[in-house]
Image (cartoon, rainbow, N blue to C red; front, side, top):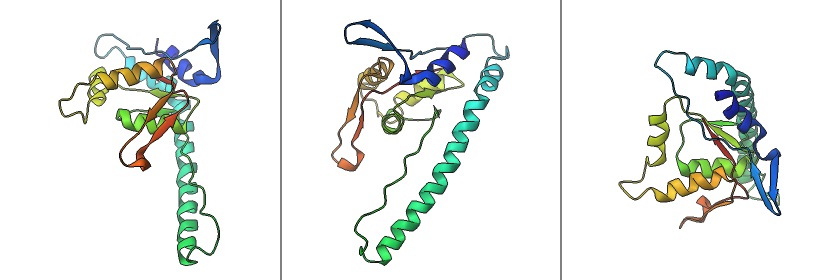
Amino acid sequence: MGLWGLVSACVGRTRAVGVKGSWHESGNLYLVLVGDSGSGKSHCFKAMLKPVWDEDLSRERQWDSELARYNAELDKHAKDKGESSELPAKPVRRQYIIEDATIEAIGKISSENPRGLLWMADELAGLLGNLDRYSSGRNDSAVKARILSAYDSLPWKTSRRDSDKDQTSAAASLSIT
């Protein structure tokens, strides 16, 4: 069963089934693996995920070096007192897997990774706890609505008082296992 969650995340938004007219469905799956404690669910799933984790870590190392280069260019630009006309473009972090994230972070990551993401949680309680981590007792229906819109690969647009925190994802794609 966990393999289907991994496959759905790997395919992401690259394929969709045309249902009717402009109605298209992506293969996002929200799965919960249920079994007795110690039955090997986590070990088996982590073994299947290893190649994806390895690629994700490789992308992270690549992003780290691009970010270091970007910061060096910013420092040079500041030392030149803006004599060069344009600021360098900030690198975008490509990733496949998220594990410990808030809904706000998922929005940002989704906007940078339009193909789609796999939200993996070893324990269901941890995933559910992340949904309302900073809600301070507020109604979490907005968080649930956001998660459901990612299932349907619908657009996410978040606007905040601080416009630097605004996010737009043309079609958030999220598989959860």
